[in-house]
Each structure stands twice: as C-alpha cells, then as structure tokens.
Length: 482
Ligand code: 6PG
Image (tube, rainbow, N blue to C red; front, side, top):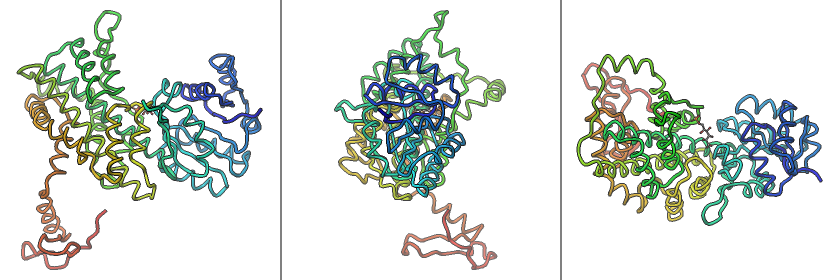
C-alpha cells in the first residue's frame, strides 16, 4: 500500500506532524536530507507505527499515492525553493507540494504562480501551536491552489485542533499566499498579546511591588475571565516557576527579546497597505528596544533609576490593569482584522474572518476564549470594518475606558513603559474622533510643498493650493497618495 502523504524535514515540528498524521490512520512517508535522521526517527519515535522512510526524493515520490501530497517542514526561504526545484522533475501534473513553514506570503504567491505553469499545485500553510500543537492538534491555515484543497482537507482537518464544538481549527483560507498571510497576522497578534502581558507584569512588579507568587495568582484569576487564553495560562506557570535556588527563574532570564521576523513582516505589510496597526508594531519595536541592553543600562545610570511606585489600593489597580489589558487586546485584534480586510480586498482573497477566528480558536499560540466572541461578531456582520463596533466588544471598550485611562496615565506618571497598552488607547481615541488635526498637516504640506488640500465645504476630489506667503506662486505639485 502506498503512502497517503510525504513529509520532508524531520526536525521537531516535522516529526510531530508525522506522528499526529499516523495517529489519525494516515500512512506517512518521511524523508530528511540526512539519511541518519530518517533512521533515528524510524527507530525512535516512529518505531511500531505505520510510518515508512524514504532515503531519496525519488524513493519518496515512488512511495506515494497519486496525486502525491508532499509537505515541506523545512526552514523558510531558499531551502523551500531548493526542495521545490528538486521535486518538480520527479512529479506528475496534479501532484501537490505543501509548505508548512513560517514563509513570508509573497514567496508563496510566487511559488503558487510558478508551479501552476508546470501543472503542480502548491499550498502554503501556516501551522501554529509549537511542538505540542504539531503532535496533538495544531491550528492549520492553508492557502494557495484551490484545486489541491479537496485532497489535503481530510488529512489536515483530522490532525488539527478542534474547538469545544468539535469543529476543526483548519479551513481553506484563500488563493495564493492567503494562508501564510493569515499566519503572519496570527504571529503579529501573538507579539501583541505577549507584549501586553509583559506590560501588565512590569506594572505589577515594579509599580505595585508584587511578589511572583502574587502575580501568578493574578494571572490564574485572569485566566478565569474574558482573558482566558493559552498565553495567560503559560504566564502564570512561568511566574510560579522557581530556579534550583528557590528564586523565580524568570528574573534570571536576560531581558532582551528575540524575534524571527514574522511580527516585523506584519508591521511592514501594514505600512505598505496604510493600515494603522499600531499595537503590533509597537510590540515589535518593544522587542527591538529590549535588545539595546547595553545602551539601556548606560542610559539608566545617566538618567537615574526610576522609582515607578504606584500608590493606592492594590486590588483596585489589579482590576484596572485587567480591564486595560482586555481593552488593548480588543484593539490589537481589531487592527489585525483591519489589515486582513485590506489585504483580502487588495488581493481578491475573499477571506472569511469568522473562519479565521475559528481557526485560531484552538491549537495555536493565541488561542483564547475571546476568539469565539470574534467569530460571533463576524457571524453577525461578515463585513464588520472595526471589531470594536460590534456590540459585545463595544460594551467592553466602554466599560473599561476609565480603568484603561487610569492605568495609561499612571504608567506615564511614574515612568513604567507600556507602549502597547497606551498606543491602543491612543488609537481608539483617534479612531473615534471625527475631526483630527490632519487639516493643519495638510496646510503645512501645501505651505512648503504646494501639495494641495481638499476643503470641507467643497466636494471630495477637488484640490486647492494656497499661496500662503504671497511668494510661493500658484502652481501646485501633483496630488497622489502612496
Ligand atoms: C506558532 C508560533 C511560531 C513562531 C514562534 C517564534 O504559531 O506556533 O507563532 O510559528 O515561530 O512563536 O516566533 P518569534 O521568534 O518571532 O517570537
């Protein structure tokens, strides 16, 4: 009997996905560039299963049922291209290559188009949930050649995480790089969620002077509220984790954050599309700032250590912080969905936002109860342009407003950096202001560069230039918006 699917790349994610597929009754053919890895896997974790090995790409191809389905679980970038180049001559028309790595979506757009010309179908799929997700149920976000989906669907939906109603956290996202785009936004939101949690932690630790056990208890309590999520849950575990000397391990970890680039891509894409994705972008910059460790140490000496003490009833502050975190999180998701909406319109992807929320409901790093509410919001209005306008989320934003402002103001007053929570509030203030000071900005542009402006008392699309100084002349520059 031939194999149902081939997987190339036996690092931890690849191995775990294969074992997961095997658990669901699929016969998987496993290949790795180095043959020893195949042997190690077959004699180790895959021992006693139906998984078979392939020591060359030809052997892999020969061992697969048609149309062949070959999933790459290798490093994103040129490694994916090099495997595609080697596979294509061995494949038949109608065969399917799947890239399950964290690929930047323009690469997937390019690969779908290039392989289409050769009659090969290509799927670029986000896979989230880390090692454990891959093994027991990840969130899977596939996009690319729609013709390939019916062949891959049963396998992917079987191995994916399931919601509480047993719905698979995997569905077809859209054409081209839509799957990898949605995974990229997922990761951007992941950056935002993580940054918000760290800001709350710093407020509690430095501002309220709380111990790690106290903070752990707070996160345990928060996890029973609307904030219920995987990231809040692991944060409570981390805060309670003691090093061998009995001290909290988290305080021994160097405060410089790493990043592999997906959050940065999200920010770059938002700038390209003109979407105010402020919270995620601040979260990326917060990681960049954290990595300037030596400079920060010097600067603290130069400016003096801040006291950062927050006075008042601790319990009241903790509840205010919870509300500020929740409200900021709504803004982060609202911005992320705005970005997806714009990309969907621009690329003709026809994204289903309720389905995206469903795919993120389980298995992935940002899984949370909150995503069910997002799904409900898009069920009510599939074209919702701002998540905060949905009545459930609007209610939370309104109820949290005073606590959120209190936390933001206090953080500024005592010098606790909270870039994401405060920028979220600033965004909402801007978004809910009918008249912003951009009129003055337009006047400045027209003053120094004859860039023209529109008038509130004239139809849109009619442009004016004023000779502000009497010396500038009446010729205007071209009017275009990048
Ligand atoms: C996931 C994660 C994962 C990501 C890591 C590291 O969904 O399972 O998003 O894909 O690669 O979380 O990301 P950073 O190194 O950029 O923090």
